[in-house]
Amino acid sequence: MKLKGSLEKFDMKKLSVVTLILLALMLALRFWQLTSLTDPETGFFTDHSNFTVPVFYALAVGSVLGVVALAYLASGAGSGEAPHRRDLPLAASSFLFAIPLAMEGVKGLRELIATVSAYYNFKDAVSAMGGYLSVVAPVFALLSAAAMLVNGVSFAAGKPLIRKLKILILCPALWAFFLTISYFKITVSYVKVSQLMLTIFADAFLMIFLFEYARFSSGIGIRDSIHAFYGAGFAAVFLLLATEVPNLFFTLFAKERLVAECDFGPYNLLGAFFVITALAYAMRATLPEATEAERDAA
Image 1 (tube, rainbow, N blue to C red):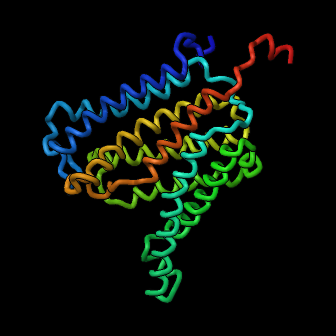
Image 2 (cartoon, rainbow, N blue to C red):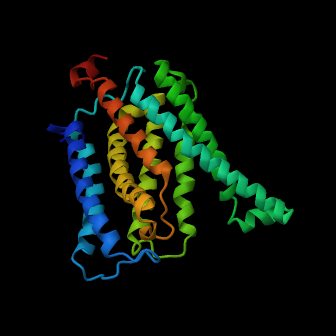
Image 3 (tube, one colour):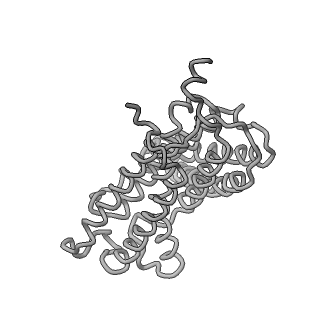
């Protein structure tokens, strides 16, 4: 029995509704926990016996696993192949996503230059900054910004420019990889600090989605991975918004409630916007999957 796409009455649009409901529940829970049950200096729950603590872990893990599983089983994913079309929402989200990526790249390079100037030795400066990750990450952040700019122009003009730059569109996934592993330099229990745990998994699923988007936009192997594209996308949206919406609110209105090491990340919020528009584009533009008879004939 074929499991992939076997839920004929459950498609990707219905999965988006399920994801939205789960996100609303998670946001309500996180706002309450971050204001009433979390020590912002350590990120630990102040009362581990509170009934919402296991609810949080169950909702966080269960939602991600459930969304990914439903994306695999849902119908209507299509073939994964899509003719390049003009799409202004996707173009706009690409341009916006490029801004924080460029800012992160410039910030990282400035820190590197300042450290090298202070140590007068590149190797010592790199060691002081925590390793070569501090050198590589800003470079890929700038390349990712360039990739998003090209992606934006491509969809604003309706011309497949991005398909000619298959290596460049991989850079955002590599940047997200370096971003994710950078958290492991923090000496803390990632499971016990709930906000940091959400951030790590949010960036990990953003990384997976950006890799799948590179395949989707370039048309390489997407036929076999379109369900992974949707699964990673919906999981990334859930985790990114569950993390950054509270961070944005506290940044604007109550900075004292921000958890240490978990500041507001504009790249994650705008990254979520990019994922949403990319998913919406795929739902509209992806060609229907060929029937078994059509595949046999081909």
